[in-house]
Image (cartoon, rainbow over all chains, first blue to last red; front, side, top):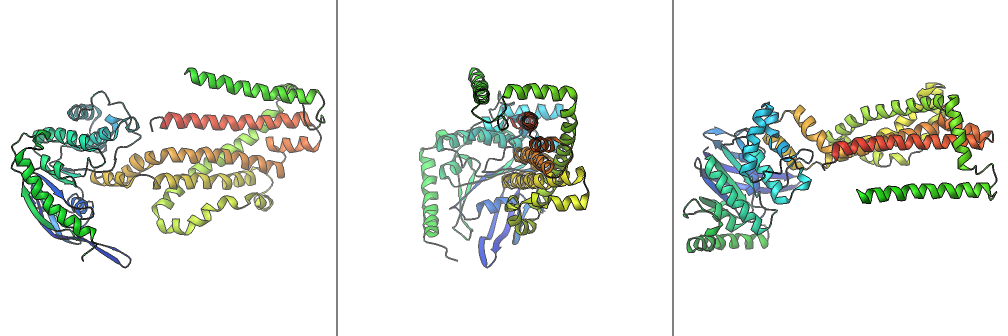
Length: 260
Length: 250
């Protein structure tokens, strides 16, 4: 699915406070592409994702998916959130089949599709467990599986591994790459980890400190299939250096305070 | 398992020791026999009251009042708690009232309720309901407020209908807390009924405690106190079992 954002603007107004989260953001993501958005906290990258997912309405501009403007959540667009979004009262398989169940898909088909995805995310053997019995990383895999089972053509990921430690983040990144390469889905990935963004993406969009604007787009010309083995290679290091010089500047700007 | 069993034996032993001390204290005449009756004699009296059918009559009266007021509290409290969660303005204006609700001496209004509703089960049920419903309501609201907002985003992104959102996300998400409220509500119902029966009533377990106290019939008074305690334990353990069955996983 092709994603095109045109002059996105988002202003949050609470009482007399007026916060410009996004200011004139435009970008294009080709069908099947994996694009990461990176920037200092509060740069509006999560807001961007919510707008693309139809969960928030922009104050100006629009997002088009395959040429159709977004006016609400769509079933062919899946979202994976940063926070734990598993349902504590459902088992792993109950969580994964939730969306299918709500759409009226029959039990046999639900189970069959869910088991395939559960295998894919490496949760086989845990189908009957409740989220409380799983680690944070496993719960994120459940959330990922719940999204994948709906066969989305666009997957929006809002720092899905942000609450995990660095090692687990890279390992799940590897798994995500392996899964993604089989789906052909477009991915819009939000992160604040430079390594993660380079490891996963075809392109990395660096955003400015608030108000969020597109500061630069960096092509990741590392061969696919790829895994975390690329970290530390000269090609990786060059992109890392380039991105860091941009992000460092923006983070310092933010540290000095708002410049609106 | 072994540890559970050990804990159970310890609990039984504690109960046994307490009864033995009470028995000893009563038999040796440390206490005046009107104040403390040997538990063994109370036990015999209970059996007699059960056989004669006297306890059953009052148990039915108290039990049905508790059941009705509890069911009404659940039926009203859960939807009202949801409404309060849905309407933040309402929550803003009622929040202070609700948080100081249990400071209001509701039982002081009992004579008024008797005048209005008549000398029957109605004022008893009304007061027990008033006492129980807010516990259910407040816990329902808290349970709903504690549901992570990300689950609302999940519901939105999966395009759930408002009905699905309510019955498949909100209620199951808040269920552990709602059950806490219901447990509280059931115990409050019992307290409401028994205390009302103390004051103005011609039947019920609470009335019999008071009646026997008034007539210096200590054996019977203790028998009815024990009956009330057993009822309370039964209500609580039933609800705990339901709670465990539905929320063992979280």
